[in-house]
Image 1: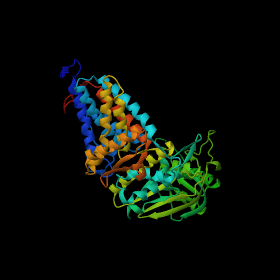
Image 2: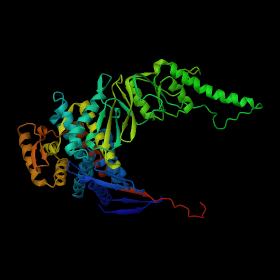
Image 3: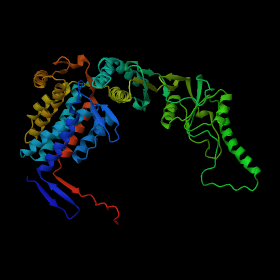
Image 4: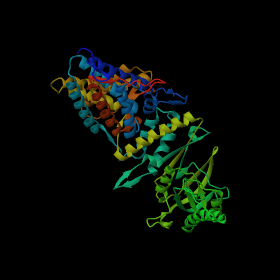
Amino acid sequence: MAYARTELPLNGERETGADVRTQNVMAAVAIANVVKSSFGPIGLDKMLVDEIGDVTITNDGATILKLLEVEHPAAKVLVELADLQDKEVGDGTTTVVILAAELLKYGNELILQKIHPSSVISGFRLAMQEAVNFIRKIVVHTDGLGRNVLEQAAATCISSKVIGGVDSEHFSKLAVDAMLRVKRIVNGKAKYPVDGVVVLKAFGKSSKESVLIDGVAVNCTIASEQMPKHKENCRVALLDFSLMKEKMRPGVQLVLTDPTEIEKCQDQEMAIIVRRIQMVIESGANVVFVSGGLDDMCAKYFVEKNIVVVRRVSTGDLRRIAKATGATVVESLVNLEGIESFEQSNLGKCGTFDQERIADNELIVLRGCGDGASATILLRGANTSMLDEMARSLHDALCVLRRVLESNTVSVGGGAADVALSVHLSEYATTLEGREQLAVQAFADALCVIPKVLAQNAAKDATELLAQMKTKHYAAQKKEEKCYIGLDLINGKVRDNLEAGVVEPAVSKVKCIKFATEAAITILRIDDMIKLNPEPQPQRGQDY
C-alpha cells in the first residue's frame, strides 16, 4: 500500500498507508527497548531526571514509563497499558510492554507480507483465548501448599528489586505477615486490601532492620509534652475538624455600640469551643485524633483530664484508624436537628497507645486494635532514593500476595509458562485452516521473547537455553504431562522452577496476555492518522 499525505479542508493533515502502521510499531518498540534492559532478576536500573532536577532510580516498568514524557500517540498506548497492569495486578508491567511490542513486530511483518490486518487480528484473538485456556490447565493450586508458597511468590516479585538478593527472604516474610494481618471477610469471601498495610520510611540503619509494626502507626506527635506518651485500654475519638477558638468567618461584620460588648463576644467564642471539648471529655474518650489544629488554651482542658490529643492527622490516617479501632470519623458535632452532641457510640477501642522515637522522628502507634485488620511496615534505609524504591518494591510484593491469596493459584515463572504456551500454540496452529494459522504461529514465537530477554539480561546464551526448554516442554506435552522447566539465571541452565520456588500469580500471566494482545490489536488496526495543526497563538502586542 502506498504512502499518501492529504491536505484536509480542516486545519490539519491526514496520513494513510502502510507507513503509518510501521511508524506506530516502531514507536511502540522504542518504548519497549527503554524498559527491556531492566527486566528480570538481574536487570539494570534506570536513572530518570525531571525538568526540576529530581532524580528517580528504579527498575519498575510502570514508574519508568510514568516519568517519561511520551508524545507519540501509539507509544502512549503502551504507557497506559503498563499503568493498567500495575493497577490490576501490581506486577508484570515490564513483561506486558515487552510482549505487546513483540506482538506488534510479528503482526506488522505478516501485514507487510500481504496478510490482511483482519486475518492477523483474528489469529491473535484465537491465540489469546487458547493461551488463557491452557494457563488454567497448568496453574498450581495453593490450597495445600501453605505459607511457603506465599513467601516464594513475594520473593520472586522482589528478586529484581533493590530489596532482592540476600534481603529477599526478610522482606518476603515481612510482606506475608503484613497481608495475613489485614485479612477481612466481605460477603463470605476473604479479602486482603493492600491499602490496609501502611508503609512508613525512616532514615538510618540498614534495610534489613525494617520491621513490621502490629497495629496502626501514624507519623504525628502528641499536642503537648504534658500529655502522657503511653495509654492502655484506649477509647479513641476521631475528629475531622479543628479544636481551636471559634472565630467569625471572613466577610461577617459585627457592629457594636457598647465597647463592653467586645469582651462578651470574645468570651462567647471561647465558650463555644470549651463546650465542644467538654462533650468529647464526657463521652469517655482518653485518646483524641484531630485533623486540624489545637491551640494551647484548648489543650489545657485535655491535660487536666490526662487525655492524649494528636493533632494535624491526615484524613487518610483518620480513615485507617477508624477501620482498625471501629471508631467513627466525626466531621461535625451538629446533628440533624441542629444541636451539637458527641455520642459515646462514636468511640473506638484499642489496647495501647504509644509515642515511639524512630531515628529523628516520633511515631504514634496503636496496638491491640479490635478489628486487627491493620499493619504498618517501617522501612529503614540510607537515603530518599533507596527508601522510595524499597516502598515501590514492597507495594508490588503486597499486590502479588493479594492476588495469590484471593485466587489461590500460581503459575511457574522464569519463562516456564511462556515456553509451555509457545509450544502448545505452535501445535494448536497446525490444526487451523486459513491465514489465521500464520498469526497464531507468530503469537507463539512472540511469547518466547520473555525467556530470551531474561537470559540476555543475565548475560547467558538465550538461544541455547530456549532450545533446551522447548525440547523438554514438547516432550512433556506429547505425554500430556505438566512441565515446569524454566531458567536458572544464576547458573545459566534450565531447572524445575516449581521446586526452586519461582512462582507468580496465575492471574498476572492471564492479564498480561490479554492486555498485551488487546494493545497490539488496537495499534495494528490503525492505517490512517489525522493530525490537527495547533492553533496559532497571538504574539506579544497583537490582538486575538
